[in-house]
Length: 320
Image (cartoon, rainbow, N blue to C red; front, side):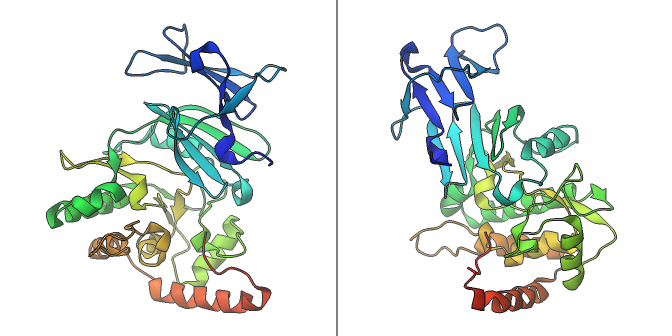
């Protein structure tokens, strides 16, 4: 793909700057009224999405810091834009082409009785190598942003809330490891380096790790502090975002992921006195106290051996 993924949303010339080209696939219009808008925001503006005609309108890149705001740009793999009450995520499939799509998981979750909020899917589409997802934005800030200013009571409160969410989600079970629709489960920590996410491969890996292989439990699988939305003023956990890695896994994996998954670390930068691993270590401990088994020591040995076996091929041993 020649255009960086962060450059796939552009402002169309004219129309007072209220139209955007979305990946040479759609045009998004902002107007004061519309018969059937994709969404109507809290300011009363209507947003309508239309397929792009044969003629691509002239458009320019959106200046940094201008609306819609680029919230996230991950290594030219995915990007997220803030349209006020709604976010747009564009993501390359890469090794996820056969995995359960995030919108399918969100639609399934919307029919469950949850005690926390999730984004509502407004539109999903895909082309050969990437997906486009418009969803509602949860109000609040990420736990990662709120954590440094929290006192100990607040921190432990959120740890227990997320542990409770893990417990609630695990009440949904399956006889097969994978996504909610039977497609592949994309969790690189369950198959580092080769990225083979077929059910039989993940089952074999789980068996090697000593995890149960007869019943599987639903899990988010990526509860990093950046995916947890909170209202620190009201001491309230608003909801959970980024469900693209969710699916049915061995019960042991739910707690083990927090013990071994450095992708769940806090992003503390140079803030003195904060440990990157504090968040996930606390949740891991809370889950253990709630009876979730753990195979983290076995996983670390397994991962180290797989990494050692691949060193001569110059494979990067970081899990992505």
